[in-house]
Structure formats: structure tokens, C-alpha cells
View 1 (cartoon, rainbow, N blue to C red):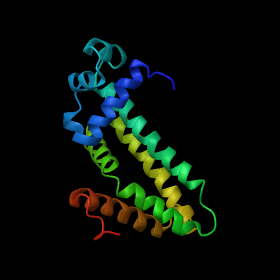
View 2 (cartoon, rainbow, N blue to C red; view 1 turned 135 degrees about the vertical axis):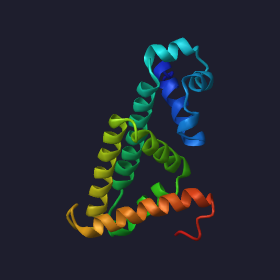
View 3 (cartoon, rainbow, N blue to C red; view 1 turned 90 degrees about the vertical axis):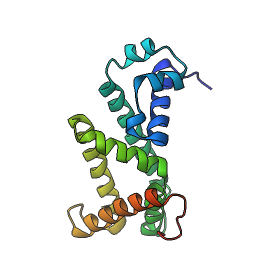
View 4 (cartoon, rainbow, N blue to C red; view 1 turned 30 degrees about the vertical axis):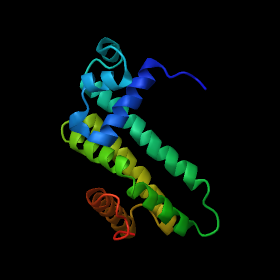
Length: 166
């Protein structure tokens, strides 16, 4: 198994903080402490907090895309049911929900994060359109996407009790 680079350690620590504690807890000192490195090494790789947030946003979006492509490649037979299950698995993951909420908050003031979120939205809409067998512009895609976002938020707010949402 390969050893993590300092930059990878930083990103893993930053993503963990974002997933577990939210965007407000994501500070360079907290990340350096969790990564067990001097803060100077962190600022060498990510001079500004914004640089760190952009890298973490990219890592988070890549992980979601990887999850979708990994699971999407397993879709055989009745794809709509399997895509629905995959989307549900994304929705009920609280660390992803907390990460996305944090990035949405950050996107209010950070155009680059806003662009990353838009790209992820396009990817999600494409997946939904595939599951429904319609174009991405179809109103059903918007309805399913809005429902997913709503369920994701409800799932996050309600905690681990998923029975009421499924």
C-alpha cells in the first residue's frame, strides 16, 4: 500500500472535518492538527483557506462521481430500480449531505465552488435522465432532482432514522 503524500494527508483531514463538523470547522490550524503536520506544510500546499476549500470540494465531487460510476456500471436488468437505490444510497449518507451543505454555504461567496456544484448538478441530472429514459431538460428530471435534494436534507436533519423517508 502506498504512503500518502503530505498533500493527500491534508485533503483527507480537511474532508473528514467537513464531513463530520461542517464548513465552519474547516480551518487551516484544525486541518494541520488532524493531518499531524506543521501548519507551514499545509500553507505551502494551500496558501489560502479558499485554496484548501476548492481542493476539498473537488475531492468530494470526485468521490461522488466515482461512487456513481462504480455503482452505475453494475446496472443491468431493470436499471431504473438500481439507479433509484444508488441515488437513495447517496441521499442517506449524512457525511455527503453535511459536505454538500457546507459547500453550498461556501458557494454563496466563492464562485469557483459554485461552478463545481453546478457541474455536479449536471452530472446528477444526467444520471436521473438516464434512469427515467428522458432528456435532461424533461420536467420529470427536475422533479426527481428536487425530491432527492429534499429527501437528502430531511435525512440529514432527522439523523439515522431512515424509515420515515424510504
